Amino acid sequence: MTPPATPDTSMPGTSAPGTSAPGTSAPGTSAPGTSAPGTSAPGTSAPGTSAPGTSAPGTSAPGTSAPGTSAPGTSAPAAVDEPLLIELLTLAQRRLARDLAARLEAEGCTLDQWRVMRCLIDDAGRSMGDLAQALLIPQASLSRIVDALTEAGLAYRRQDEQDRRRITAHLSRRGLIRLERLDALAAAHDAAVRAACGTPDPGRLLRHLTEA
Image 1: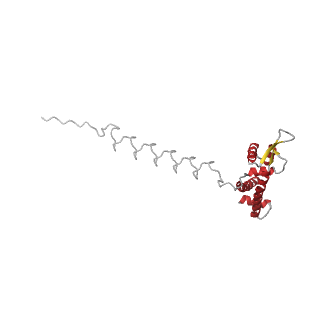
Image 2: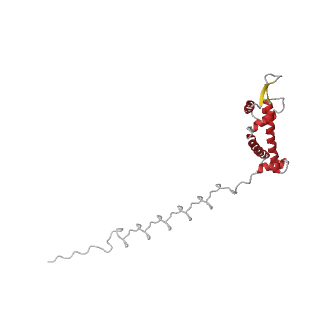
Image 3: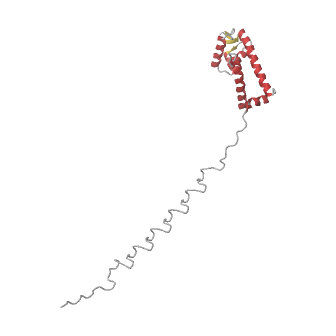
């Protein structure tokens, strides 16, 4: 005989709670949009991580410069004031000395040698200290200048008759003749400078020499 069929022991809705649900997802495992609450916000950025314009407050200011890094008024400084008198006189003196020195050099004489010879034109003689003070030449340099004049026969040294410890320098006869020639060159140079200025006025002479 055929055994009787086994009755159906399953009841409607016999799946275990949580194992399967309509849509095959357990409650809380996924939400519409496949993202859990709090894991992502619209725009895919968490609050505070980025601001509109992709810059955090205070990291940049309009104009891309931080306060205090540039001061207003960055234009070039004002023009330099007018030259001081000492500057003008120094410039004029150097230009005059340069031109005269070139003329004296052609005669085998330096500018300072010529100045020393002019200081010795009287027969009284001058000590080295007196010469240094009158010509504003350091005494060591002055000694070399007098040595050169002595070797050339243009000057000589002599002991003072009153104080044997005092040595004075004198211009020789040959030095006097040579000085006349050198003075003529210096006078011609002076006249040429005055003629170029068109006036003997010291102010105009100074302007001519400093603007040349």
